[in-house]
Image 1 (cartoon, rainbow, N blue to C red):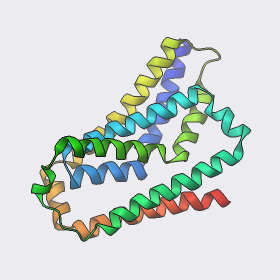
Image 2 (cartoon, rainbow, N blue to C red):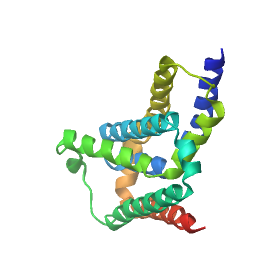
Image 3 (cartoon, helix red, strand yellow):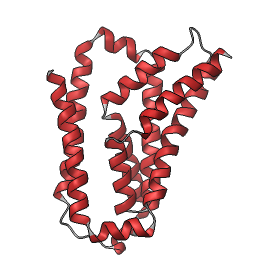
Image 4 (cartoon, rainbow, N blue to C red):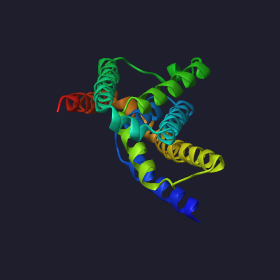
Length: 209
């Protein structure tokens, strides 16, 4: 019963954070709309893989490590923020480059692999997510848990992360959202890029506070 309560508490707390808009949502949404359903799902799986990394780190004592070495968190915020800003700049810089449906069919396997990697790096570049995982796990984990509990928790974390972002990708990869995007590509890309840059710079600047 204690294990079930811990699982429910951790997953409920993480789910609230997952559905909150942020860099990960922006990246998956843009990938699904401007590319394809396949790439959107790949990005969502990358988000799930990133969640697994945070979950394993939290189980191994990430919270204790960050408390013991506060400067590590500051470094993570600086590097992660600059990386998110860089991703935003890339989106902004390509805003005026035309995109045709024909481009989307080229080398689907390679494009999906890139989308998977982009989703993963976007997820793990946000140290605030690491803090959420570390704090939630520290608050809800039982005093002693079994290997089966840990494996179950990691699998469920992947399902929560990948499941939510897959829903986002499936919702935005349909014909209507894509046709709107193709008509308004420059404005949409600049908005998405601007949001990513702002979030990244805000995160990086908070490292000096």
